[in-house]
Image (cartoon, rainbow, N blue to C red):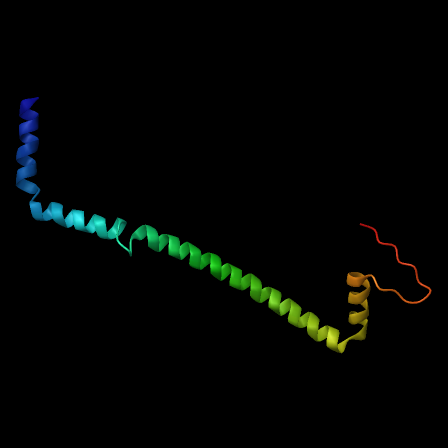
Length: 100
């Protein structure tokens, strides 16, 4: 057992230097614990992706409502359909039954 430990110590003294250990330590600190660590960059990228998907959803909603607004301004039949469906308005001598 002592011979095995001695051979490991001899190998480590020969190939592992203080400068190498310091370099690995500094590299690990920069990658894991600094302000620009790999973990933080991953979290920031995930947040950017989430915000981009929200922007896409909002853009789709904006396009839908702009088209609806344009149709409401130009088409009286669309206006009547929306008013009847959304606000339950009716004509004279007309009964409305709401089924939910």
